[in-house]
Length: 445
Ligand code: S3P
Image (cartoon, rainbow, N blue to C red; front, side):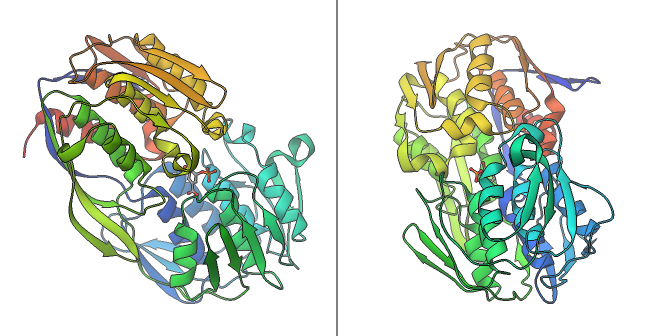
């Protein structure tokens, strides 16, 4: 009743009387990329189950296939057999296309830096404007030759790799993508690679490399990678907490909601959103059920119901643990009582869009009281319960999947009708987003 689609990829959303149902979200995007990349350079075959069907992960798959890696469907949706090629891949005969995916470009650059052939990797308009010096610099120090636009800082990147040596490197920002690129190159370098991190970022690469027999040591914020070959491992990819976050916020902020999300990854380097929502007062409205470990990653079902949230201050080491969730947290803050302050999140300015600017701009259109700061935002919340203090209007995704989905959730909580232009952008990480939204509108258990 509350959504409609138009062919130019816009969707209309309004607030339903109730919101509910049981669903699964796509496989974790970060783990999906790594399950393909690490198994591709391992020895042996691996069965990957629950792989994200999002466009970003498909970009990684196509790049690896272009380098001779066999990745074939294995029956059930999201199941694939990856045939490991070992550390040496085949020279691609054409330019590699990472699409919209920073993870594909940065992690694959770590692989390309170890190959003796020449490769070119590019992406869409958004990705070609995102900073690449952060990977180019350390990979050059390791011995790779890399060129890019604007003094080697922007894609397309041209890489001639091989003969890498380990380095000791101070990461300038808490980035899992940069850390992973260096780690992947370090596996093929001579000598050890030491990485000093300013704060912990997601650790899926570390976990998977260890599970594959690679030697890494973690000591607080310091990480050592030893060269060596990996053995393929089967992986069951858990649901993506970054996708679950949309439904969690929708349910908490709607006045009559009850949603069960099955099989969500609960890696502590990713659960900052859960901690913040608890601090905002979610309490027993946000419950973890059946906590378990699957494939070396903690997993749980999440039961979420309506709550009364209040504003909080978010910053420091918490930010890397919830970086991708800031746009949807800003939506939650609009429906919370009191003020929310988000700081230390300047990295948001170099995501798929400038997420500080775009989130503030779009929520302002809906009538929110929200201001951008250099490294975050300040939100004056209008109160809880989904009582419709924001008014529906036209919103724009700016080509950013997380913005499109955040505005959809804002529309589920606002008065009137909210139109999301660029609705199809959700497919970058969550191709079934709009079907799942329709399912929740039916409120069937
Ligand atoms: C990711 C790391 C994060 C995150 C991105 C996925 C990864 O980026 O924003 O969506 O899979 O390593 P940074 O590491 O650049 O902060």
